[in-house]
Image 1: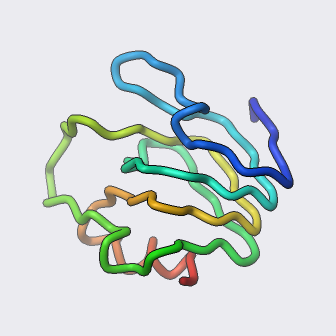
Image 2: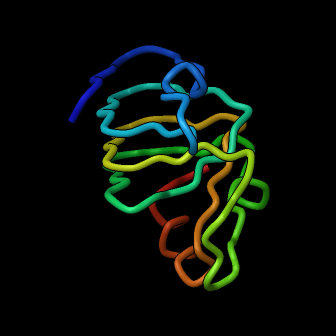
Length: 110
């Protein structure tokens, strides 16, 4: 893991490594409120959650299902190899493969 943050509020864009594509890689967050606006695309690697991770604003607008086989996205932030415990995601959406959207959504409460 790289950056460790806890007990704070962070604009998700402040964590981005601006490359092509823009990514967040290797963070460990505990009791953090992440503020958008942003869409995060789960890349290869891990995106783990523990405890009560919440999405403010409800599930309907938070999950952006991707069609099978889609490999390119524009205007999103990739995220991988990251761990979140008791975190809140405000005004942040998640682009996930349609087949895995329900399983991914089950990691969060509203």
